Length: 258
Image (cartoon, rainbow, N blue to C red; front, top):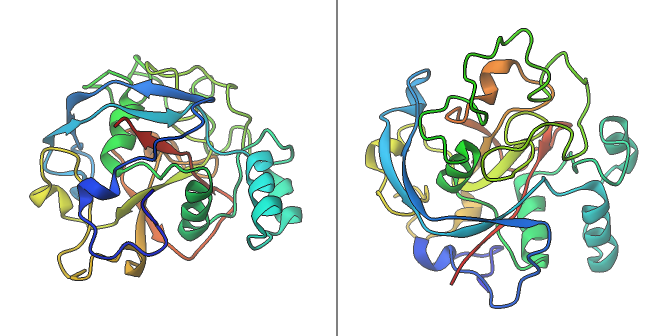
């Protein structure tokens, strides 16, 4: 497996490789395909461009408090502030929060998986609905009366257990709202201008040694329980300092099919 803690001199295709032994329970197979990535609402979503995504597996729901607790207990990884976590994710079935990008990377290595690329995440979120603005078929949903679709600002006021809301076309939970989800990519505002068509992964050209860890800002996707409705759009590109953790940050895992 690729050691995500120190990725030096590894090209994008090798980075996206997957180990031979993975526990696929709790994951769904996302079929390969081509889609139009991006949107027209924000400058960093443009230009809309064609992207090819190979087949991969993705967690049905974000990693839970219980799963992360097991990781900490079995590896001796730094203990998070469980008291703060349980305020907004009160049970083991709620998504883990207060995890930064490095924490998420450490967990994915432990389970021999990885974080999704930004392209994989958006492709999966669309659920086969290439022109959809949100992860559900009806894009005319009233943003002031759409709590039946997602957990966002002013609805639940904390995280929710996976499966609370309808799944998208690929049977994935919470691809809109609940928690922001860390992606593998470094954040680059104008990456779409130079993005390759197949399996894009944002690694800045100034990263001459190929070390992903050095990049400060990482992509987050999906919006959260603490964001307004607009952040739930499938094309919305968020970004955060990779070393920061918040009560609305989580993640889910993917693995390639090789």
